[in-house]
Length: 225
Image (cartoon, rainbow, N blue to C red; front, side, top):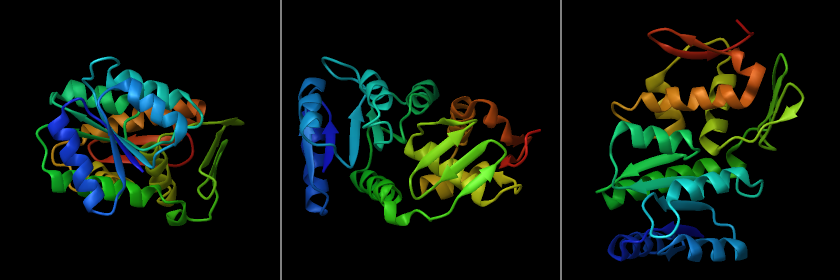
């Protein structure tokens, strides 16, 4: 089930209809109260979340989702009429996995939803272990241990960390990271990578030093600098 939290009935109904017709069961909610009530009954596979809502704004909802263990890794795509870089960065920095400004093409939105769901499936994760210094990552369990502490990451943060680990000591450009982790061309939005790297470093604490910036190119992971 996909939850669509959007107060504009025309947008909500169109998105829910398209998802259902595409074989992706969806349910719409006009406000946060309805959403929280449904979440208490069933945890969805993904949430499409508008920022501007009548009772509780989307960013507040997102922060609550990320702070709860049961929904910390729940995939979330933000839907909003706000299109400035500040608003995009704010949403991503708060833990959103993707950001779609209005007006959007319904087929593009569908493609992003499908891509995010594909990367959510546990079967797509490799049964490997990665260890660098005090950092240990277990893809099959979606577990990250940094300096002896379990770390909760969003889906995109986890995929970004795995990509770096799969290419240990290899410099990855921002464009490559965008196309691999986000699964589509994200023209001009390399700032998205920087935001996620910053958040990832913060969450990993001392182990964040293993992620190194290669000026003018991108990032790599290896022994601490």
